[in-house]
Length: 163
Image (tube, rainbow, N blue to C red; front, top):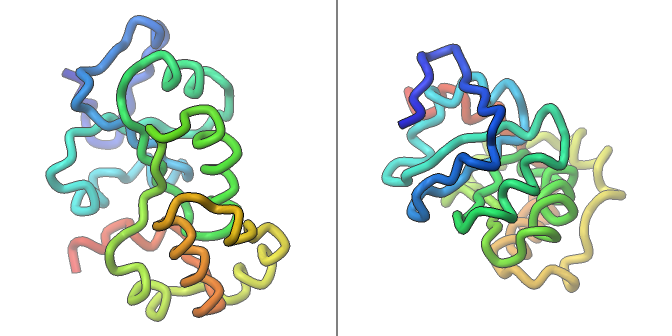
């Protein structure tokens, strides 16, 4: 059982030997702020047995470890074009079908309430071609971002479950 005290983290130096039970989903968190405050976002993962890992510092250790274990991987990142590209080019590329992108069921509502148009415009050149995306849910997310002409940074989820 890995259960760090709130505000602390557990660093596993011998990660090659750390093999969670296969029913555990590995949730990769893109932003360090979200990782540090994951307890405030637990409402997003209700019912999911998970181990949370942070993408930073960026190294290939996490990918190597994820490739070596049977567990599913859920990418919890920004709902923007940079976050989608991180998922596609760093995780799905190496993990295939066992990698999925976290898309909240109320994404359309969240975009209307918290959407960032300026960031959308800055990242527009990073937008993947929808026709090349094979994952239906990810394709729908990209279409939704274009329809609303805004994106979401994952920090909006911190503490939102308390409201």
